[in-house]
Amino acid sequence: MTTDVRGRFTVVGIGPGDPELITLKAARLIGAAPVVAYHAGVRKQSHARRIASSLIPAGAIEEELRYPVTTGTTSHPGGYVGAMAEFYESCAVRLSAHLDAGRDVVLLAEGDPLFYGSSMYLHDRFKEIYETSVVPGVPAFAAATAAVSTPLVRQTDVLTVLPGTLPEPELARRLADTEAAIIMKLGRTFPAVRSALEAAGRLEGAWYVERASQPEERWLPVADVDPSSVPYFSLIVVPGDSAPAPASPAARLRQESSEEPSVTEPVEVTSGGGEVLVVGLGPGPDGWLTPEVSAALDEVGHVVGYAPYVNRVPQRAGLQRHASGNTVEVDRARHALDLALAGERVAVVSGGDAGVFGMASAVFEAASDPAYAGVRVRVLPGVSAVQAVAARAGAPVGADFAVMSLSDRLKPWSVIEDRLRAVAAADLVLAIYNPASRSRTEQIGLARDVLLEQRKPDTVVIVGRDVGRAEESLTVTTLGELDPDSIDMKCLVIVGASSTRVTPAGQVWTPRFVR
Image (cartoon, rainbow, N blue to C red; front, side, top):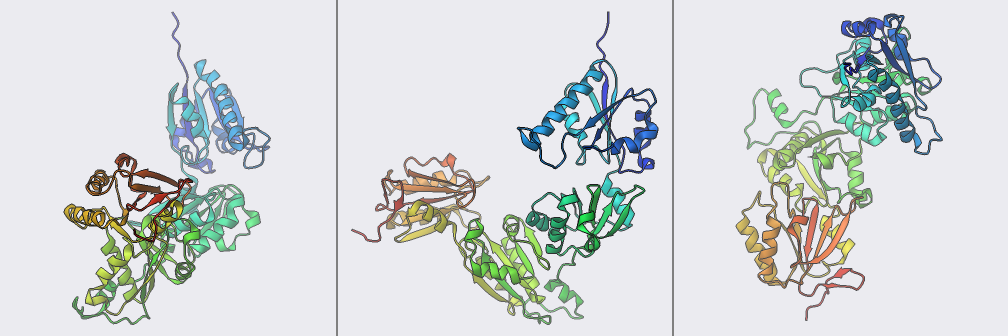
């Protein structure tokens, strides 16, 4: 009786290029492998095989897996993605023949196999079929950091690894938001990467490293690199020590003083006229950002806000970003005011209009502390979500209307119910912000029931979701037919008055007159 014994598939990391950086375990497995596989570039010798050549047994079967295309054009009907998918499938067929015959296969992987490695695509195909394992290797960025002999991260520094293929604005934003970074996948992307580093204020102190740990290794400041000389086997090291130091908030100014002032005693601003601008970014599209706000964002040194809103501000040299969570509005406002006390110009950002359930009120609440008496606060308007949804629907708020939030985080639900009844009794159009969230799913249903106490079931209702974005949707329904389960945190709801009408084309408007 014969037993079907399949071979084992092992992906072995062989490091960035120096054969002496191959681990002992990797060397042992390569030296005993019946089958050794490796990738090779188009019209190029395999870099992986060159690194491990002295370890491959003389009698081993070698499988060269040559890419059909890299980043160039291809005539494949599925394009680059289709060509690569077909390639990996053909590689799997070739290696499966060895595994099914009981021969172990070792696949060489440069650097670390699971760090931007091509080997992971074969591992994904085999892990449910054969016995598989992965041997880690020294990643290229570790060798590059060692080459420049500069600490990458210290203590609580955050390290971000970024592909240079990211869109330039996104790359600049992420570089500005981290202490240290590694940028991979250079080559033709280098000019855009350099521009992103400059926009993020991280060009100074960034190192370019080419062919780390190999005989041809070289490194120099990114600012000194000739873009035409950048090969694929290169990366950029942005040490945490190169990050700009945060501006000193008022707390630090007080600590530096020999006599700390009391909380009711204004701190003298000695470093210039600090100011806080509270700005509305609009509901989403860049076209809805006002020229006034855009100009202000070009001039401030700091942007403070809820992370998704901070992320919408284009990065540029000299701009520092301070992102935080969604429920710390007053703490966020104090941070902005502290920066202004130190003489900085600061923008606090909100989606929509900052004065409509945005950060403006929170900033004035924090600024009521006498410690901030010397800080100037200005509010710059933005396009509000109710304006955007109303415009998409037609003219539902063309007459008297009210605006409410269903969030009961800062006010009791009983107050919300009383106000809903008052709006319903006054027969006002009602725009509802924050109709639901992950933790608040029942309020919109309760609000509908309260309104139905005085409003007819056929009252017009508009539900706008992600208005202004690619996934935008607009639904016109009635109060009686409104499905609470269809409402989420991305929605704004407009409940019409008794006079609100729907045109044959489905547009909603409210007459200016009352009869």
